Length: 186
Image (tube, rainbow, N blue to C red; front, side, top):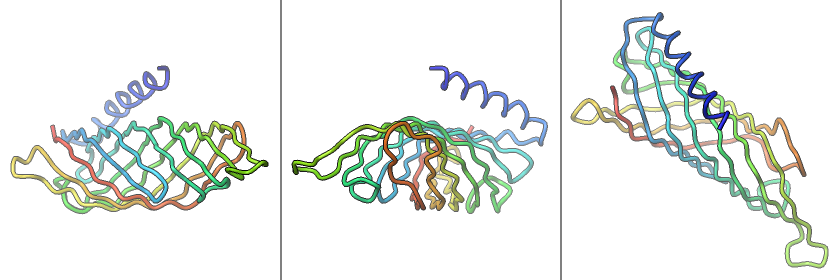
């Protein structure tokens, strides 16, 4: 609960700061989904525009991890809540169409792992992982007829780094994410 309070406070603080950067009143709320080869991230993203073509955003979500045998162990599954802080630069002044961005995610995952499954030497356990995941993103905001609703497909690439591990090490490394969001502009 303290993490949620912190995120709400931080986002309100950032909104206050950005009001001094320009006259933009663009504020977006989105339901976002990102998929990657070994997982799935549903989340809620809030974005505030500032200084003509710039925007900052905050996302809260849940990272569903299914590394399978692509991690350190024969089987790795789990997930956890987390948040993202990011910046986007829109190529058009109206905060639509093409954009480039950077985002940093922090995930607090609980991963169940197993090795030598169905053998006498089978072993298993649970690891608590704090993940730092910086990415660069590219996407397109498509405003729907009303001008209030929009769809945003995106692609992001970066690295997943386990910065804190309680238990056995689990998979980490390069990551490619495909995203899709549905949002409302205020």
